[in-house]
Image 1 (spheres, rainbow, N blue to C red):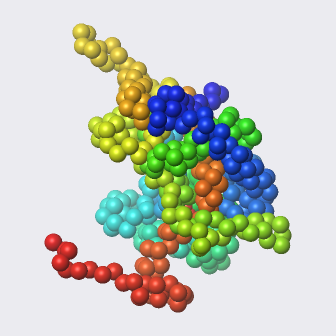
Image 2 (cartoon, rainbow, N blue to C red):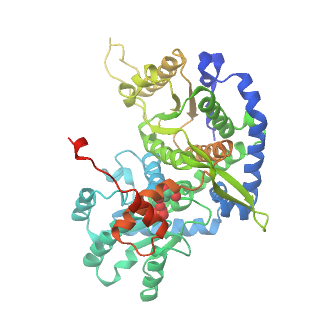
Image 3 (cartoon, helix red, strand yellow):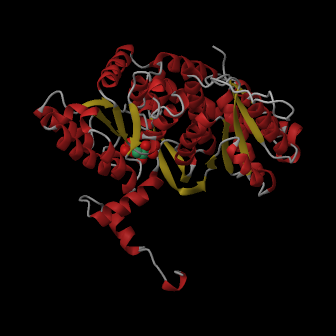
Length: 489
Ligand code: PA5
């Protein structure tokens, strides 16, 4: 299987001048980077540390073969029986599925039966509180022909919880007493409201509310190779091929030589550009429509992992395993801001700003060498006649690189031989490792998301959720939203 390549040329000063990385920059950061690489390696090699600190995602490709076989079996059963599958989830419990659906299934999959082969239509809901989309879906789907998969690691998140309450009532009404047999819950193996609901329902009917675990030490945004497997099985993606790609990338990203390790190099070069050249925006621009949602997945990965208020304080527990705390005496309040885009559409949008606007960005392109199909432009005598779409896409990508490099603006290219399960798995894993390593370089905890709690706590407080701490309540009451009518026009 041909592997993904990484072209970092246009991040270096030799290609783009003063805004690029110099050999001296690399030499300066290498000792620190080696320590970080050693630290990360030590944690990944230790099962207890991996689970405690949230790095279990790094070894998901080694999952038990019997578990995978069970997932395939369940996927086949669902595919064989139902016309529609509705997934409910948000954040990490949604973006990986959407990215996989768009990258690994045919475009217009839901619209055309031959494209789906024997698989059901897929709908992704519960990722918003907008009533309009779910309303339309439930009015148009037939409950008896619909299987529902609710995904929430915590089992408490408002969006999927609200959507599930509605979908559950809809199923119950349309299917009757045994409606629970059309529900699968993917959640924490032990805790949370969803897990408790599974246990209650299974006591009433052992065949209802079947469940799969989101494994300990796997955070939402790192969970595609865990919670996403049932979706892949339902739509007929080869999970073994996907894991072979992940494994290949794991091996490449475990190399001690930082200069040969693609994920470490990517993170290191971006860190230099962030620290020394003030490049705080990270734009991911795949030149493939099917990878646009993968760029959306990456936005969550980078934003939630690296945008942190405090540095990390590392303590070693009595069990010898590290404990990471937010160091409230060491303010960070940084983290590169990710933006998702797509070539060639966004060449007629954000690209103007990329080339001539504020010089604060690094672009990462994804170039797909071989598309699944191709089209030739008919006719004679026109500049475009006889050209293939894929050759124009490649030229557009090369032209975009040139336009940026000639303005001295940093960019790099990930070269994907094709969008296959193998390469897509490798791509996701590459970004996960790069993000983990960047977290090390920044000395922050890349595996929590305390900033997301702010809005949740405010909502819970206003909704009167029991158990809100006094500290949170007084924080909300002492800093109310102030609305001066003068500024509302
Ligand atoms: O990365 C994360 O952990 C979060 O973004 C979660 O995925 C998101 O908040 C959804 O949480 P849950 O799966 O618990 O409903």
